[in-house]
Amino acid sequence: MPLALLALAIGAFGIGTTEFVVMGLLPEVADEFSVSIPTAGWLTTGYALGVFGGAPLLTALGTRVSRKRMLMSLMGLFIAGNAISALAPAFGVLLAGRIVASLAHGAFFGIGAVVAAGLVARDKRAGAIAMMFTGLTVANVVGVPGGTLLGQTVGWRATFLAVAAIGVVGLAGVARLVPDLPQTSGEPSSPGATGLRRELAAFLNVQVLLAMGMTVVGFGGVFAAITYIAPMMTEVTGYADSSVTWLLVLLGLGMVGGNLIGGRFADRALMPMLYVALSALTATLALFTLTAHSKPAAAVSIFLVGFFGFATVPPLQKRVLDQAAAAPTLASAVNVGAFNLGNALAAWLGGLVISAGLGYTAPNWVGAALAASGLALAFLSARLERRAAGTAGTATASRTVRVAGSSVRPEGSDPRQDLPAVRAEDSAAAAARPTPPRAGRAARRPR
Image (cartoon, rainbow, N blue to C red; front, side, top):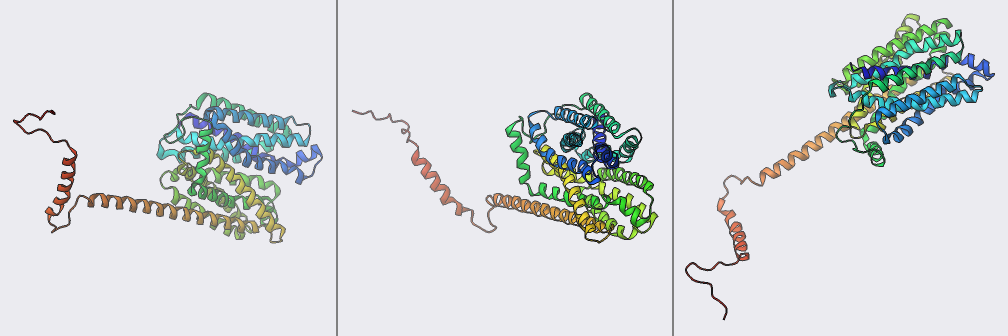
């Protein structure tokens, strides 16, 4: 494994920790600034919106610099945002710090995925992307519980300072270990407006848009369920409040395993991996409405939701990279934003069904419907791809037949039928040439 992947994974670990750790610290933050829990919840909402908006914006601006330098700049922005959060004198400043940190999120994962894929052979790219995203999944197992414990014990400001320190380590790793990779063939040779136009042109590819649609609805199904996992486990399943942390650790372990397996098999068979993962995720979420009434079954379901949900991440990201091969950077970053858009959409829809009085298990049906929609888009994408390949193959075969047929005479035809045309051509050519003087007779001079 290239050490550069480790540097990218450390940066991903810090970003993943700061994204989710605030959910466990909302009571402490609300108490210090004398705001309500829903108001404190804007620290999560504002971060998600910052990710969605920052991914395309900063990536587009970054077309003028090398990817390594852009990654270093993004880690610097991440460090600054967490430092602002740690030192915030008012809630508004804390929210601003969260938004500053979030702006680096989407662009870091988008550009980092392109860099990770460029560090290895073509048949190992999904595995390299999965290795970088492992930092994000490990954050859910180690970073978020550890940061929550630190914040509850020492104070929430200490958590943001610790995350900023992780960012410093990630920045040093990127500066020391990540190489300045040359551009691949098909990418613009110079940065600037030409490169940005090439990047934007990738969104005219219907396959790129379908892949992003799979990301929004397919992966979004995961967050329809896990956003409300705490009240579901305590109110429906009967777990104590103290058990929710360990259930989230179990969810994180499933995410780590699914991410690694998804990366391994996506290199061999990307679309089949998506079919299996999205089908299994749909079934797991649908059954979760039943298994939520049993503690052991609910625990298994939580692990499987994390496993199958994150098994889709490497193939979805690689699908975008493959379809936008000539200009992958912006498309990759926007796809990371699409993950967060899916999270926000799924959480909103899950909240709607709960508000409608359908209970805390109702979001599982929403998640299953979203995952099934992602599966349908995957089948549609593959069908259109096969049709395009068949059309291209037919056109090539037709051209080959026409070229070959022009030099083949039908059986039984008289070869002399071609002679008049040849003679006519020869006569025209001869008439165009000057007539040389006859041998033995001098050319007649003008008098």
